[in-house]
Image (cartoon, rainbow, N blue to C red; front, top):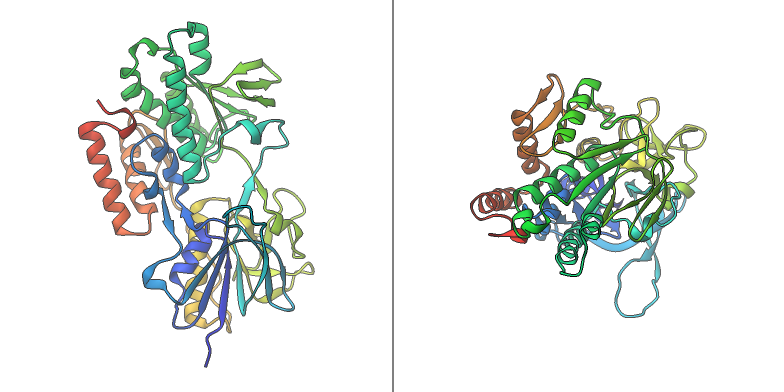
Length: 422
């Protein structure tokens, strides 16, 4: 008897978890994603700042122990025919000048988890001049830009005013990703890189911009205020209620302050629905981010609200009707674990126990061994930093990477970061 085919669209937290946990004895698995690895997004800022190798912040979908039952296609899912049970795909490989080819993938069950795209809110120049922090390639680009900034500012014909403009780092987004990026960049400069070029000491600045009136709005106001004061104490400037009107090659234009210089601009805010989700004929919320609505068993709902059999939605691209959850890695991970357990145990033919989200502590790093945690108890300071740092090990899915990250920390402690070694 042949096994049914489970098609998984996406290789993020939900899709990757599902692909690695579903039983190959029960299913043939086909993963469709333009990215061949899961990107451990909470680790990217640390990788960009030299705490460990970029490869430790990602993990491949293809695994020797999962072959040959798991098949991966580097492609973009462009549409789905639910009646014919076909996913229409476009080749995302890049070899020579060949044009992308279209192909089809037949399925018995499909899990839709393409994630979200970057939301630039239509800001002119954002996609052309800003750097992002979603993939290891983004982290590499940020690290290279930092080194280029240092090289440029060190030239003998560059004035002090030009040095300050070049060494101006601006981060758009006052959520955890933006705050942690600012904290890691602060640590890198003040603990390492300023000693490489002492003539530039005191000239680098880090500024966080956010359209909201406060940062870290997902945290309790007391913790957010603690974070605000902690960052200000490190001379990280916070520009809340900041409206960015335009992004240029050498800076940004805001409604409040006009043109501001930027040698490095990191865009760390906003999600928008993927093109696949936008065109699917399924139920979606009337307001807010367009996401696929599911029932509590993660079955995708038709426009009339009835669930589709053998069609599941999870990750940032999907939300449970009447029980909206944030677009967080932890939520996507739990949904991936839930659905894999349900498919393994029930073979998808009987109703599984409804998904229940287990609220985990929220963590954010603030720099210089300081952090905040919101959970059953609120923590601040070095204890929160230790919990956040140990969480870096928990995010990875393999012991090999956990050990490698720990060893990298030891080498950094002994001999400094690779990009700024003494």
